[in-house]
Image 1 (cartoon, protein in one colour):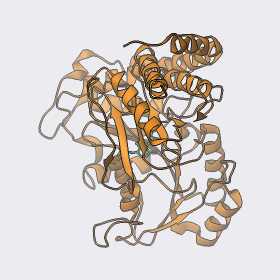
Image 2 (cartoon, rainbow, N blue to C red):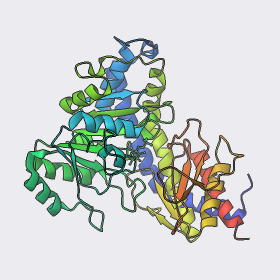
Image 3 (tube, rainbow, N blue to C red):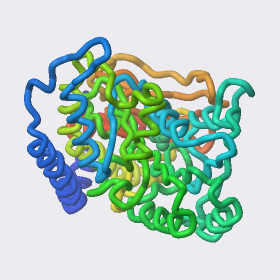
Image 4 (cartoon, rainbow, N blue to C red):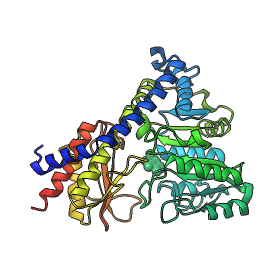
Length: 419
Ligand SMILES: *Cc1c(COP(=O)(O)O)cnc(C)c1O
């Protein structure tokens, strides 16, 4: 990889400007690591806990202890984490079907939930597929205000009108692929308190994907009943091979565990098949790996801003998730960006990504991913739909060094096509 002097100088300049930001990120990583190590110590984590179980998986000490540690670290009373949960969408599905009953309402107060939940809720897809709607669960939504804050007046009116029918108040922490700001834990805490003051029996459920360990605490430390996420994002630390987690209050987690396995069985079974070590190690690494991704995102924001692109968040703004957007304004620029990320990846660096029609998307999409674990987006990855304003969404970076190389490579590719 050859980088022009311009890119090398710009990277150096960015790192000078980001010294304080990087120090703050390291401080958060340190505090979260300390929390994890204290919990490992308290629960006397030992090598024997990495032994695989098979069959029912009764008395899997590692699994049970990791559940306890997960709860501690998330500031929750209970949790389960399983390699067998295939992705974040399944973890969210387990949580929602665990809590909701016919006649209930799920009320999303941070706008539209992540795309993959549309069919789970039943807002798209076919009648009879088994969505929440098929089971008599209604959906309501409150959009965020233009400045990204909650619309408390509207939330109050819905909660007051529908009362205890609102079983789940749903909050997506990260912007995902929407054009809005990511919510901070402080904002979610305030909304949780507000919801509970009007409707104490409602469960506050947070889609925590991409937010874990970007701050010192998770929403469960401030009263959320349930947080849900994927292990091939932040909390798997780039080490977990697959999986998802749910943490929260004992009753909420118990109800979710009955969906994970079956009613009455819950979390007490589930062979770990040798995956415990990866999950323990992943959690151990997670604050650090998340810090690497955050630094990579800050660096990218600085460089692409300096090259004249609109970026969100700005290089000097605080971050509550690991996602960065770059508005490229031209299809060939978006493609060059993704080609550069791919070329700067450790795996499949020789592959040239092309825009493609993807199921569920109305426009062609280009994606770059050169990851050790398939689809892992804590590893440097990028994608964007081929439609104006040709926004590249990207996240990750297992190590800052490799993330830095990926970003320099993307910037170089975009400069090169101007020639
Ligand atoms: C990644 C993500 C999910 C789940 O996606 P999967 O691909 O199923 O893991 C849900 N919500 C948000 C905000 C996400 O970023």
